[in-house]
Length: 120
Image (cartoon, rainbow, N blue to C red; front, side):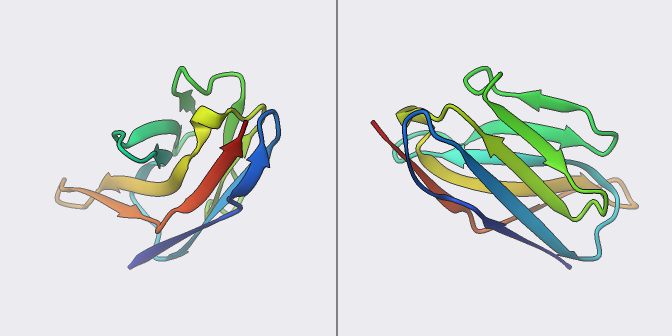
C-alpha cells in the first residue's frame, strides 16, 4: 500500500554535507511518525532521527546539532539534512513510516536504503 524510496546518498569528505530524501507513495494514513535509521557493517541498526505526525523531532545523541529531520507540506516527502559529517556516519540510511491500524495493530513501512560514505 505504501512505498518509500530514498535518495541523496553518496560519498563526501569529513566535514561535508548531504541531504537525503524519502518519497512516499500510496495510501498514507494513521502514521504516528517517520524515522531515519542507519546501519553500518557489523553494527546494530540505529534510530537517527524521528519526526512525529505533529512535527516533534528527536535525534540520536551522536547526531544532535548536526542533522535535521523535516517533512514537506504534502506529508509525502521526508528529509534528513546532514552537516559536519564524520567517518562514523558512514552507513546505509533507511526511512520508515509507522503507525497503528484501525484495530490497533502496529504497522511499519521501510525504504530500500541509500548509502552514505564519509571519507577521512
